[in-house]
Length: 304
Image 1 (tube, rainbow, N blue to C red):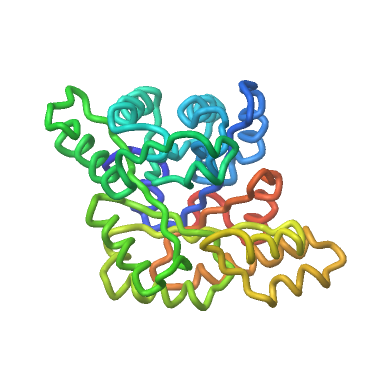
Image 2 (image 1 turned 135 degrees about the vertical axis):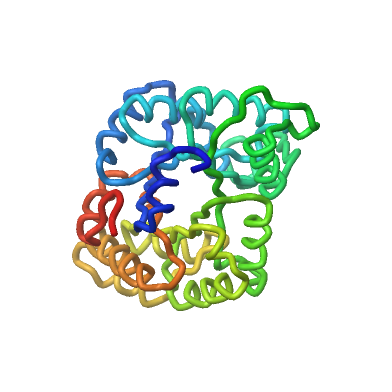
């Protein structure tokens, strides 16, 4: 065990992991985290704490992760390269580990021009792959990126994101293999609606040996409406929403219920794909839907 985290133990034991997402608020009220934690508690092995998601300013992921720990959740703290240089990131990694964070998801981060401060100066001192390598060296050597010794190593289960749908498709599995080589233990994918294309991505991952070295959690999310489906299909880069799903939501009397049905169906299908070690439920600002989704999919923390 590299970190002693629940997520690491579940995946090491070969159980089907369940993670969810908890978005920090656009404010300093800790009760928002407490309320969301109470919704998710008992339903997931670990919970992602997003880091200025989609380049929009929110409560910092480290503080929200600490509050989540106090509420009995195990956080996966997300860290983007967009907002910090390597000095700040290494300081935050040590601080987070000292506060009890055991899982870290390394991301480059959406460009600041997409968020609520488009005039902000992006840092991008490192990209996600060099961040992964830096965290691995901090944990395993242990040393800072400059080569100086770390007196007490952070014990972290290291993760990254993967997008099976971004262009060029033939290089998506290859890029994930580079993150494995840099040192990740697990990855969570972009939201899956096109299962057939995801199956091809997983086939390529198996051929490259990625699934032998890295636990892959398939990203899923409920759609609330046909409008949301159309927006994600046409306006969100790297998303692949088949027309048939848009049509199902358009024809449904209760679009939210239909969206949950679609999400459960995707979970049931990806569970059958060789190399999928779990699912990551991203119910953006709809955390209340997560317990129903997992219940209808027959999943609970530490499922066989």
